Image 1: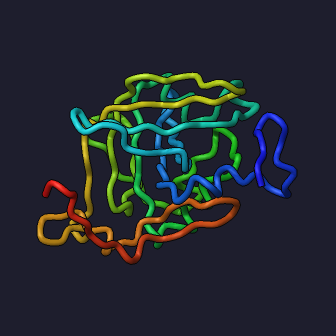
Image 2: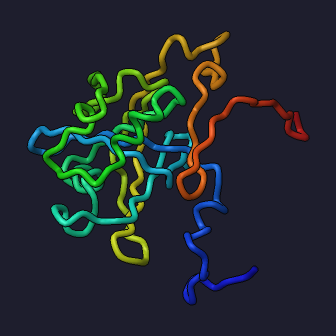
Image 3: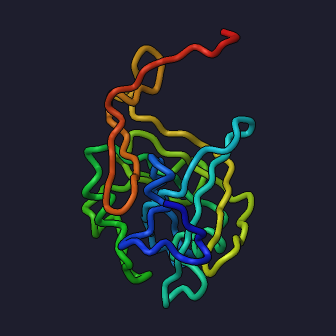
Amino acid sequence: MFYEPKDGHGLPHNPFNAIVTPRPIGWVSTRGTDGKDNLAPYSFFNAVAYKPPQVMFASTSAKPDRGDTKDSVANIRDTGVFAINIVSFALRDAMNATSGPWGREVDEFEHAGLDKAACDTINCARVAASPATLECKLTQIVQLPGVANFAVFGEVTGVHMRDDCMTDGLFDVRTFSPLSRLGYRDYATVTDPFSLNRPNE
């Protein structure tokens, strides 16, 4: 099968995000200028640089009470900070509970029954149970082609790692099974990692 996206695919569901998989999930926490906390998962997420460490996520829809975007991007535009919380298999249901189209007045931490912890370098809450959290200061927001498509870039200014996720000085994914996004309603966990040496090592 071949299709050009401009002409449509003719399938029951869009296959695009089922092709680009697995994708890590950036569980983005923000705090509005009104002090209200927000938490939402984004699967268009990744690390993009080492020095200084930088990450990005993209938001691709809007809410009626936010105009051109969603709560996360709106809060980041206003405050210039956000946190990326890593999602473990154990947190899958809580993550899913925060993915709904809730009004801006809803605190998704409370809605999902999640404990908050304070960030150290930014004014933002983080998911206390997350295996790791990246505290970020906004570097730029890029408006992409299409309605409500925004890519958000941030520099990592603080890193939290749970002590029980460390093994011999390494942050060990085997200790918490990170969750990844596949297509449609499908997810997967990382449970069988292996190592490969690069040709010059």
